[in-house]
Image (tube, rainbow, N blue to C red):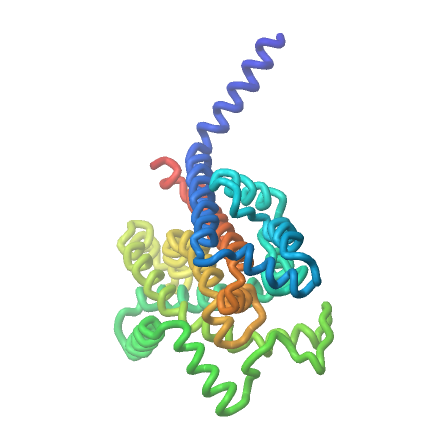
Length: 349
C-alpha cells in the first residue's frame, strides 16, 4: 500500500515537471541571468577608481567626530564591503547582504538606503508606466488592426503618417517637446513634481488622485506617444498574417458583419503574439525611466537613479540597478510563461 502511494506521488511529480518543462527551462534561464546580473553589479562598483571606503571613512570621521580607524570600521559595516578581503569573500558578503534584503546604503546621506528609496519612489514609476503602457497598447493595437483591415483611404494615410513620425522621434525628445509647449510656453500642465503640495494631502481621496493624474499627464502622454507607433506596426503585421487564415475567409463567407470578424476573429488572434511584447515593453519603460523622469523631474525610481549617478553614490546606484534588473528579468519570465500557457502551439513546439 505504501509503495503504491509513493509510486503515485512520484508519478504525479514526474508528470508535473514534464508537463510544464518549458516553464522550468525559463525559470532556469531567469536564475542564470539574475546570477550574471549580480556578478556584473558587484564588479561595477569594485572597478571604480579610488578607494571608496577611505573616502567614505573621511566623511564619517568629520561628521561624527571619531577617529579615522573607527570611521573605517563603521564604513565597512554600513557599506557591507571590506576591500582588504579577497574578491571571493567580498562577493559572498555582497550576496549575503542581498539575501537579507540589504541593497546598499548611501555614502553621502546618513541613514539612507536603496531599500528606502525604492519603497518611496517605486509606486510613482509603476503608476506612470502602467497607465502609459495600457493607453499605448489599446490605441496602438486598435489602430494597427484597423489599418490591416482597411488598407486604402485617407484614414490609412493619416494613421501611417502619425506612426512614422512618432516612431522615428526618440521618447526623450517627445518629452522635451511636450514640456516646452504644454508646461513652459502655455503653462497648461506642471513641469515637475507628482502632486500639488499646497492643495492635496497624500491619501486615498479624490483631490489627491486628481492632482496625481494632473501632474502625471505629461510623462504618461510622452510615454504613450512614443509607444503607440510601435504597437500599431506590430499589430498591423500580425493582423495581415491572420487575414489569410481559413477561419477569416469562412467568417466572411458566412456573411458575418465586419465588426464581429474584426473583434472576434482578427483582433483576438492577432494580439496573441503581442502578449510577450507587452511585458517586454513594460520592462523597457521601467528600465528607461531615468531619462524620462529626469526630464519631467518626476519623483520616480528613475529620477533617483539619475541623482545617485550624478553625485557618484555608487552603492545606491548598485542597489537600484540590481532592483531594476530583477524587475526586468521577472517581467520577461512572466511574459514567456504566459505566452506559452495561452498558446498551446508554443508548448507543443
